[in-house]
Length: 520
Image (cartoon, rainbow, N blue to C red; front, side, top):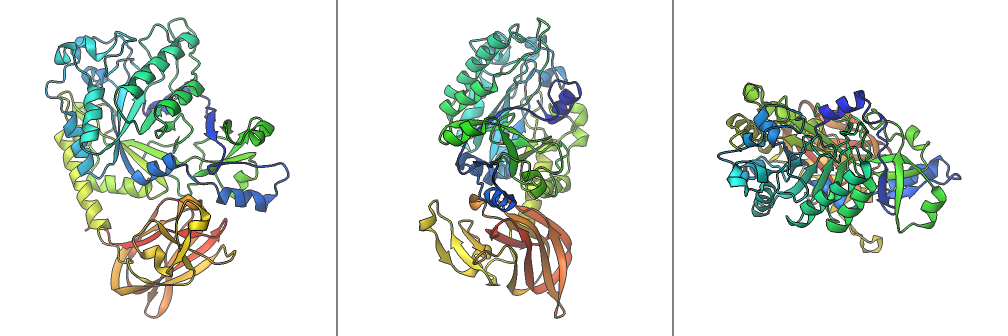
């Protein structure tokens, strides 16, 4: 399901607005209990030390991922199927999954997700547990398996592989009989997670409706999570899952202030504290579509804290499945570049939907837009004018898993092009002013900042000044940074800039600082 659908589900009452899906996470570095005795300084310090799990960090570094919505809806020209479609319609004559993956990779995308089963219940693999599958279509005489073709192509091109499996099923007679359907869903998950090699992301939405028996299905998310952790422990579980959350909009616009550390309520705090090595159950506080999720004010209400980063999903077209009538409404390269700034550039990962057409190919209109976008990305971010700059103030650290293995480096760590080194302040300073001397006078109009999130997300506000005719002039500012923050401003020409960290929850870190010029 796409989030336009998610919004409809919420309005229809299928999902609580507060997104009360239960999260199961390992207490440790990426989750902490807030004790009743903790005062504000202790709570803020704990929040500043929450870090991503290895699977979350790998996912965050991807930056760009893609959705391929493809199925029976492609051939019925619908967005939502009812599970009663004539499967003889499904016959992509020229299907080439390798083309999908190649085009995605050429666009700079590093992980892709296939709609293995949408709400209509049609499976793109020959499942043993339903007849509503590709095995009952004309495609390859009933011997096709598009999930296998997808997995093989991902391996060939070195692409991360993700699977979308809709919890809602408008075809299955078991849907609405919660126990029976949840067991069926586990069988589907097992097929997908054992027959096709490594899976890097499992994507659920919260679409939910009544079954043939008139009863609303109750999903066994906890059992599903447990199975995924067992069969594919490296996979992030997204949206209705414990690793990645929806940013709350389908516009491609992330929040201007995006915290990856969120407050939660420990359902049984004593149990959490006494079973620190076990998976614990948490409920996020409030509505995850709100603009303020992780401010100091929100943290003061917490009984626990968790690393829960945002994914921003959006389609390259108005719809999520391919419709020929939308060929003239594909997003332009300039718009896609804007999406990068407003998603990845606001501490999120961009999930861009690129729907294959009825021939089983990415259309020419989509390809041209993606190629133009990649050209603009390379032209803009190909040269960092701050690379190798002289940095005055603070100290440099080389990141290591164990604190005792961390060593100091030069203060230029924020501009050395190495994400494993970072700049920070000495002592307990939570503010700083850092002068950065460029190698030569340069014109630029983009600032890129990255924190070393493996030690936490800490920066609350910052500003950038340029030295113009001997005086400092503020040219950019922002709030949170996180994995990446991008700010555009009017072009400025200078040989020196000054970064001011105005507020931070603990010693601020800067893994990378970049100064770029937008492509003309």
